[in-house]
Each structure stands twice: as C-alpha cells, then as structure tokens.
Amino acid sequence: MLVDVGGVLLMPDHEMVNRIATSFGGTATTEGELVRAHYLGIAAGERPGDFDWGPYRLALLHAARVPGEAVTTADAALAEALAGPADVVWSQVLPGAREGMESIVASGARLAIVSNSDGTVEASLGARRLVPAGTPVLDSAAVGISKPDPGIFALALEALGVAADRAWHVGDVPSADVVGARAAGVHPLHLDPVGWCHALDHDHVRTLGEVAGVIPG
Image (tube, rainbow, N blue to C red; front, side, top):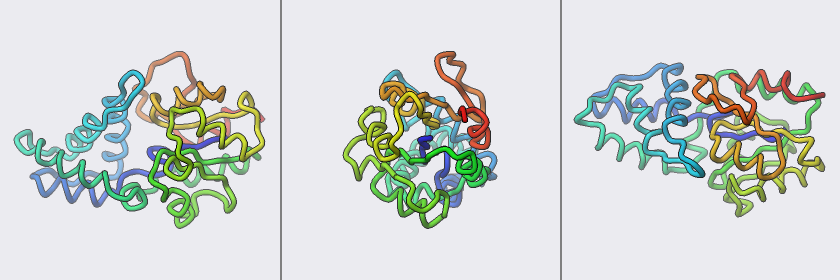
C-alpha cells in the first residue's frame, strides 16, 4: 500500500489558516469546516494533467467567510504562507488518519509513503508517529521525482519488493495520485470524503479507515 501525505494524513495548519482569514475580516473555521474546504478546494483546483492552487486557496478563504473585497489580498497572504516549509505548513493531523493507518498496518499490507514535498516528510511523519519506524518514505524533493511521474511510484515498489499489479496507492489529488499510480501500473484509490469525484475509471473511499477493507488480502 502506497500512501500520500497531504490531504490523506496531514492538513494545512488550522491556526495558520484562521490567523490569515481573521486578519482580513473572516471568521475562524472549525476543524470540520477546514477539512471540508480542503477537499472542495481539491475539486476546484483539478485541471487535466495539472493542479491549480489558486481555486484551492479560495476554497479555504470562502470557508472562513473572508469578505469579497479582501479576498485578493488575503489570497496573496495565504499563498505566501502555504509556500513555507511543508513540515510547518502541513502539520495538522487529519481526523481519523492515525486510526486509518493503524488499520492498514494491522491488515498486513506492506506500506510506503509517496509524497510531493520539500524533503521534510519523513521527519514530519516520524515526529507525529503516523507511520511505523522503517517505513520507506519517497519524498519528491529527496528522490528528485514528483507525482504524477511513475518513477516515484517505481522507487516505492522497489523499496517494498512488491509488483505494481499487486500494489494500491491512496491519495486525494487525481491529477497527481490517480494519474501517476495508473501510469506506474498501480491500482489508484481516490480519497474523497465529500464525494465530489464521479469518475468511473478508478475506485474511491470516503475515509482512510475504509482502505484496509478495500484492498485484497
């Protein structure tokens, strides 16, 4: 089992988003509002073969009810904040992520992490004890290959000693996770808690806890 990080295990720091939103006249979001906004932002930002972070940021600001006249300047501030070190920005553990990972590990599946990041993912996950010690972590900045390039998936499969047709990858961004996994011959599994994706060419789960029940034994 190959697992993404952003939007699957970790979210943008809740306090950071609220601090920016409220400084531009918005109101603080609840954790549930921010989580929902993340996945709606993924839906809004998806483009054929690419991802646009502009609509993603606007979804977070909309959830925080930032007034229309302040959105442009708030968006610039949020873009700058999101460009910071990933271990600082993507620091909020998603509700259910820890339990979902525990269920995957308990299923006996061999596990690797595949993430587009800045080289900080392994330390970040280790500090939060989200994956077992010794789990292979393929961080795009560390290995020099980013999703959807199938090469990063090939490295993960090599580390696990698993054939592509026996592997699954769970992620929340179809243009990176579904497209990349499929190109590598890996079965894609789209984590979509809000049910925005209606594509019939790949499987979906609403929570990470469902993953262990989907993958074959």
